[in-house]
Length: 515
Image (cartoon, rainbow, N blue to C red; front, side, top):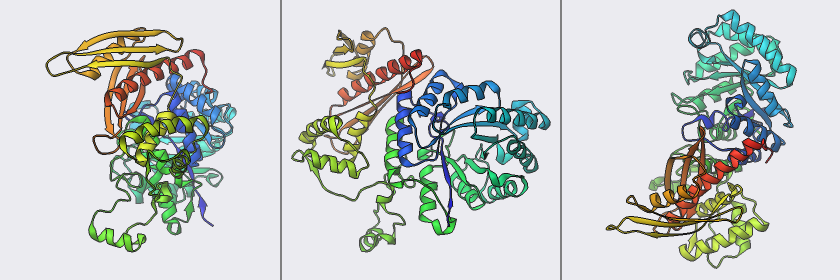
C-alpha cells in the first residue's frame, strides 16, 4: 500500500516573500480557498508577528479554511508563539510552526548562541508552544548545513518536548539529492520516537535542485513536503507543489507514495496565483508552463497524433487543462458559457454567471471568438473584487503628438458623491489619468510601484490585462484591470488597487478579518 505524503503549502508565507509576489488580505483569503479545493493538507498562512497585515490574514484564513490545517510561523520566542497561537486558535485544525537556526554559521553570526543554549531554547519553546496547541512543527533552520550529529540532537530535543512534525529545511538550497536523502535517513534511524512524528522537508531552489531533493527525501522516508504553487519563494524560490505532486502521480510505482491532491485543480491554482501577483511562469515551466503540453517539432506532432503516450507522460486533463475545443462566440448562450467554465474548473452560477455572461457578450461582439484564456481572465476579474469606495463613472482623454494629453476624470464614491477634475500631462493618457485620480482621492497617500500590461491573447482586438501595485504605510496593494481598451483597463486597475488599499486598512483598523 502506497505511503500517504502530506502536502504543506507555504505559498502564502514563504512564497509571498518572493519579490513582486505580495498579496493583500482579500487576495490571500481567495488563494487559501483555492488551496483547500486543491486538497493541500496544511496551509502555512503567514508569519503572524511580522506585521498587523500578516496577523490579520492568518486570522482570516483560520476562519474560512475548514478541512486543511492552518499554520503560522513563529521564532522560538514566547511573543512570537503567543501571536501565532492567537492568530490560528480558532482554526478547525490549528498548528504552530516554530523554528531556530542550528548551523554553525547561523548560531555564531546571527543568534550569537552556543550549541547548549540553542538546545535549551528548543526544549523550552517547543514545550511552551505545545502547552497552547496540540499540533507543533519544529524546523532547525539551515538544517542541510548543520553538523549531522548536532542536527540529531536538536531534533531529539524537539521530539522530546512535544513536536508532532519535524521539518528539515534546505534553507539556502545547498543540498544535493543523495546527500539530503542520507540526512533524512540519519534522522529517521537515530532520533528516538521519530516514528511517532511526521518528517517534513522544505527545499529552496538556489541550485535548481529543490524538487530533486524533495523527491529524494520522500524515497528516504519523509512523510510531509513543503512547497509553493509555481515554485515562488525567497530568492530562486521553493519546491514547486505541482512538480512534486505530478511526479508522485506519474511515477507512483517508483516512489510508492501518493498525495490527496485533486490534480485537476493545479492549473487553476497556478493561473490564479499568477493573476493575483502579476508574476507569470516561464513558458517552459514544468507542468504549468504554456508550452508544457505543446508540440512543435514535426516528429513529435506525428507521434502525438498517432498515440499521445509517445511524447506525453501525463495528460493535460490531469492538471486541469481541457481538450474540449468548442468555440464560443457572440451567438453562444449562457449554458454553453457555464459548461465551458465548468470544464475549466470554475463553478459559476446565479448573479455571478449573469454578470460574466454580460461581459462575455460584450467581448464576443468585438472578438468574434472568445478563448479559454479570455474566459479565465473574466473570471479572475470577478474573483478578486472587494467593496468599492471609488468607482469609475466616466473619463475623456484628449491626446495627440502635438499637444499635451488631458484627462477629464469622474469618480463616484460609495456614499454617492461625484468627484471630477481635468488634468494635463506631457507623458500620455495613463499618466494624465493617474494624476487625475490622485487629485480626486487626495485623502489617500500612496505611490505607484509597478505597472504591467499583458495581452490575454494575440491580435489587435485582444483583451488587455493591466496589473498595478501601489504602496502605502509600508504595505503593497495589487490592482487588476481588464478590457479591450487598454487605457480603460489601466484606469480600472489603478482604482482597483486603491480600493484594495482602503479595504485592507479598514479591516486592520476594525480588526474584521473574518471575511
